[in-house]
Image (cartoon, rainbow, N blue to C red; front, side):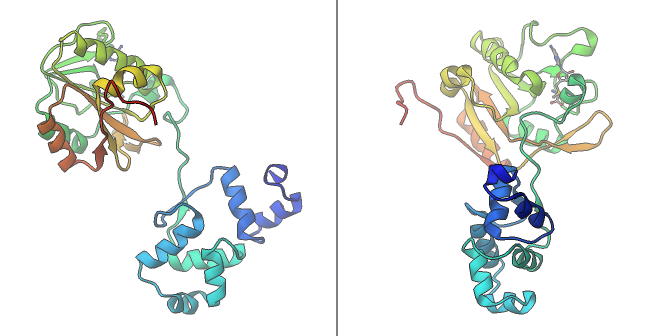
Length: 280
Ligand SMILES: C[S@@+](CC[C@H](N)C(=O)[O-])C[C@H]1O[C@@H](n2cnc3c(N)ncnc32)[C@H](O)[C@@H]1O
């Protein structure tokens, strides 16, 4: 760690005891991907501190009184200088609930693959889907315990296979196993292109690095980036928040359906790529 950050091992040991400069602390935070949540938005920790103070309408005088720090010490912290000790005092007064942000992962936590893939879309999220897009004809990757309401459910537990059986109906809702989400997106696109379903609504992690995403989905799909995270249901009924970002990707949804969804859910639709768009 010391080598990585470019300081002595003693500096790291002191930091672990709460002694040191904020600039070293930030270098360590950067190198360990340690992010704080519970502060206002900002590009740096210092900007976040300043924005939090402004958002909560706290004057410097007020903070001087509450923290026992001087004006200069507070301004130093808002400008990227100062000591860890002062930072901790400021945080205790300004954002007592600030804590480590759960590291973003592309997958559920470790565990059996099948267990990790058994996460069910919660009823409140589904209500927005029904209201915006209508009743669901097909869930091609359903589960007996899932609250998703669909006329036809393909259940792997009963020998069904949504990756080989033909899809059908007006609307399919697809919250697939995230360990192979790309395979399901390919399948959705293939079944939609073949005209087996008129509209497909997929709830998938925001993974946009595949050639398929860039060359096919970016042209054919509409994408809604969800703000915040979804609390899925585990087979035991407990809720579990996704440790990664999600998007709703639709094929064949009309403008009215998309507008309705945007009124119900937090997030935004991205502009669909056009065939003659050039990369900037
Ligand atoms: C993330 S869960 C979602 C369940 C449900 N669609 C929902 O939204 O609540 C994905 C489900 O896909 C099922 N599954 C996995 N492979 C499948 C396949 N080839 N055909 C049908 N279902 C499959 C798993 O059993 C798992 O329960």
